[in-house]
Each structure stands twice: as structure tokens, then as C-alpha cells.
Image 1 (cartoon, rainbow, N blue to C red):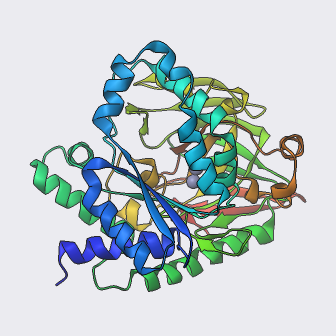
Image 2: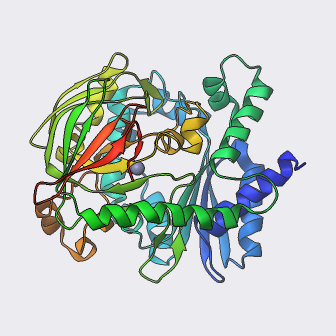
Length: 412
Ligand code: ZN
Ligand code: ZN
């Protein structure tokens, strides 16, 4: 029987060795909350064991963030301090790895002025442009790992006393990332990568023109795919050939929708946690790629603000396929955390597209990417659309209709 400590240690090693895959002589930047210091230290230890050059921890604090959003002077939200921009950009340009440990209370910013949040997003997007581009284009290795916190655990398991809720959430996280404490997680991830690759190859073989989604929830939605789109999954290579796993867990196979060729009605199958607000029952009406109607039964205003931060925020940047029968989906746990929930179900994202999902786009100018159908935005928000009865048909350029999903799962 493996202890909780064994599992934590294995998880820290997994994030460092498979997640960012830090190399001998490379710098690692870890972002963590102060109340997760002990886990962050385990990651630091694992990184030095992998012969990292240096490990820097960029500490955050939920409580301070909340106080800032509630009390700071209004102009604070129109820019971020230049030293923060330089810190991230300098390390990224020096080819450091970036590991983000997320444990925030999903409702930490509840009740905060959405205008402040939106301006802060805009400022971050504008000032961190270079850094974001390096990450989004996989120029440097990066990864995100989630840690259980009391507030998050209470949201996921409201009926359990706090310590039990935290323990239960940790067990769900370990299950989702294939950690058992026996030290085999790294090998299990190698196998998992192979399975993802199987679907990638079939989908790339068809080179679909578009996908048609339909289910009883009321989605009837066509996603045009970019010409020369590439389906991707799991790990990626930097231009220098360093393999890394941006998201752990990851169950998705994803590519780029054409920003001008999405059409119809799409409904979210799960609530979306955004800036500390849980948005329920999202429904989008889309015309010629643009969201023309956005409704929700709760926090509709937050939803509507998030699709107008710029022109691209009302268009789609990602289409991802996830079998309804996946470890996270089968755990029947709503995590209120996109990293997990997006791997429980098929999803779409409005906002920025990933350039590596279109052939040649890594070397294209911004204008060329737009012309290729790749969406451009300072935001990227995933929302879940997969249900147990979801069907997806793929249409080839010569008009053949191929079942891609039936009853929520891959048809091949
Ligand atoms: Zn995704
Ligand atoms: Zn996404």
C-alpha cells in the first residue's frame, strides 16, 4: 500500500520529468500559491535531481489577489508592473521551462467587479504578448499541474468535512494523472501518449473539411476546420526537440477551427468556472464564425464580457475531442477546473488558436494566420460540449460523411 506522501512525490516527479521535462542545465520557473509551499518544494527537489541549472518559484496568494481586486486604486487594473513582464519574458527567451501549479479557489474572485477583471486581462494580454507567444507556439516547455486546496475541495465535495474533502480531491487528481505511488506514472504516460497518437493519425488521414455536432441537449453545430489543420494530442516538441506535456491530465485530441466557418447552436454540457464565477447552461448562437448570441442561466454577464475583450474573443480557436469514457469522465466528478473538466468531455474554446494546429502556421505572420482561418485573441476559454449521446460526423472535402463520434465516444 502506497502512502499519500509516495503519491505526492510521484506526482511532483511526473510534473517535472514528463510535464516540463526539465533538462540538465536548464532553468525552471514554478508558479505556486504560498499555501502549497511544501508541494512546490517537492517539485524544486525533483528538478534539481534532474540537474536543473536553477529553479525559481514565483509565489502567489489568493487572499492577497482578492484584497487587491476589491480595494486597490482603480488605475491598478490598466497595466501590470514591468518587472513582471521582464521576469517572464527574460526566462522564456533564455529557454527556461515553466511549471504552473494551480490550486486557486475557483470562487476566489466572486463578487469582484467584472470590469476590473476584464481590464486586467486586457493589460496582461497586451504586455505579456511576447511571453504568451513563446508559450503558445511551444518555443519553450511549459506545463500546468493542479493541487487540491480546501476551498476547491469543498466546492467539489460540498457534503464532506474539509479534511476528507481535500483527501478525496487529491485521490481524484492522482487517478486523473495516473499516479498510484508505485513509481510507474512516467511509464504509464508513455503508453497513454501512444493511445492518443492512434486517433491523431486517423483524423489527420481524413483531413476533414468540417465536423457536425448534434445531441439531445440541443446542439446542432458545424465547425469548419482550417485548410491544412493538424490534429494534436498529448506531448509536444519545442523547436530544439525537447518533448513536454503542457497539460496533465490530458485526454484530448484537438485542432484549429476556421474562425469564419462555424455555424449553428452549441450548448455547454458542464458549468464553466471563469475568474471565480461559475457560469451555468451556456448557449451560443454562431453565424459565420462569430458568436452573435450568448446566454447563460447564471453569471451571464461574466460570459458576455469574456467574449468581447477583443474581436477574436467571439470566435473559435480550438476544437477538441475527448471520449465520454475517459478516466476523468468516469470519475463522475465535476472539478470546477478547466484543466480537469476539459479532459472529461469534448470541448471548444473561444479566443486564441494554437498555431501548431495548422501546417506552416508557426512561420506565418499574424495576417497570414488570420487568412488561414486561425483565430487571434488575447483570451482562450474552453467550454465543454460533450454528452453521453453526442454524435459527430466528419465531412471530407469530396463530400463523404464519416462517423467520428457515436454515443459520446470515438467511432473508430
Ligand atoms: Zn483543449
Ligand atoms: Zn483550450
